[in-house]
Length: 111
Image (cartoon, rainbow, N blue to C red; front, side, top):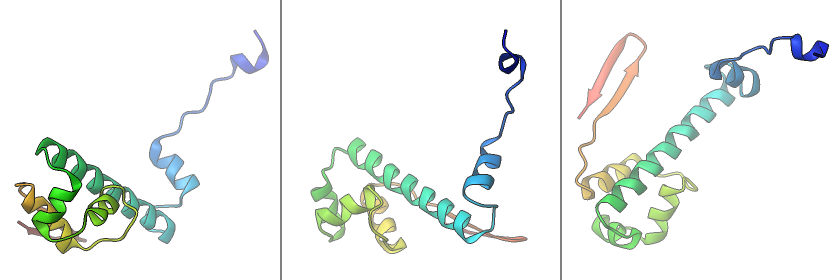
């Protein structure tokens, strides 16, 4: 065995890796990353739900009064979009939406 194979590899948690590569929690770069990640998840959720409802992007767009291109951009997170549009999309998909906003010590739940 070589000297290198006798050494144990150091393990890192995902949070430690993100802290090192993206920045600590609360830093502007980390906050931007976390927001982008959440928007990606929302877009994916819309895509999956739309497909389960057997709707095309064009059909979903017609239900809420936007073009197919806007649905495509939302699903692929290539465009900023408003919460109002997101709520319309989920309503058109017959999805129950609950928003939870945590504010330091208080909690506000919108349903």
